[in-house]
Length: 377
Image (cartoon, rainbow, N blue to C red; front, top):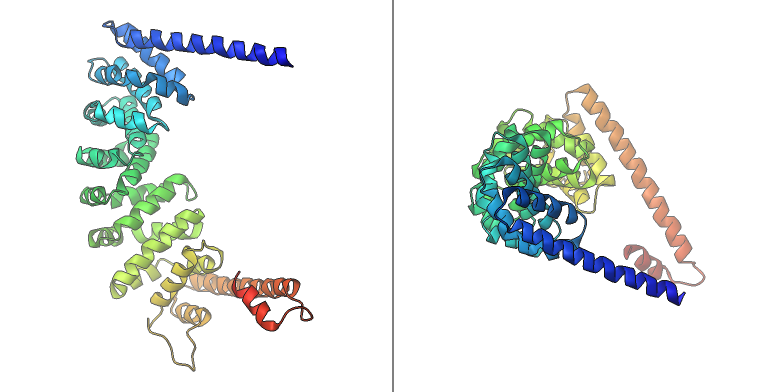
């Protein structure tokens, strides 16, 4: 047992020396004046840093010469350097900041203009990774990258489009960048992507999150309702998206209705939103459930509470909405959803009663203890 442990330690020491020697040799090559040696070294850095955080730390000294390679008049050198920097930046905040500080943004943004699709895709992926750093977000936003990322979203290949949306989402968490995104007219390409992507995908989730942020501005709300199929695309996410996407979708519609109910109530209602909202009131996340209930109240004929003779219950609100739906298919689906919602509500109430019966026995605990136990859940 002891000999095995000693043997493993010795091998580890040998491996460490070999790795260190390999790193030093590669750093020597990347700093050389020979272009072919630099390309070879960049490819080796890319390989070694693909899965190793330790190697990313060891090769941080390669950032500056790799950035210099981005400016070389050689597509092969550009691509090799870009891919090496991309791997260096993954899950390494220090390298992310160091790459931007070394002046990489200029050439990377230039590659977004490139007719070389591979360079454009790698540049978009690099901006996605670099924009994950809170330090880099305002710098990337001020660099002029946002309109170019949106151009990739409009005209790029599918993988580049996906990366551009994720990069824009990262950048949008900085308030100054959000206004820059809005100025670049992002709603049409976001809606187009939302229509074509898989509704339960991460891309749909980030698209929905971006749109929710953008409708906080009047220009964003106007653009969404003006775009053909814009509101419908959000409603479809509300119906078929992931839980997080549905939360963003209902947040989008609620923001619109709360901002100007008279203006946005009809455009939302006509897209058949009621069944999806009913489902969210029962099966949504803790955040989306109350949002769905609030939106249902805003969408009915009168936004004000009813009299005591006609209580302001969710069921009454929905019945009122269903009576206004002219489309028989939508009305039938909404009625079915209401019946299912009532059934689920009854089942939940029954489960609560069963849980209370298990926790509180009349012989041992007063009724007030049972009530307290149930309300605390």
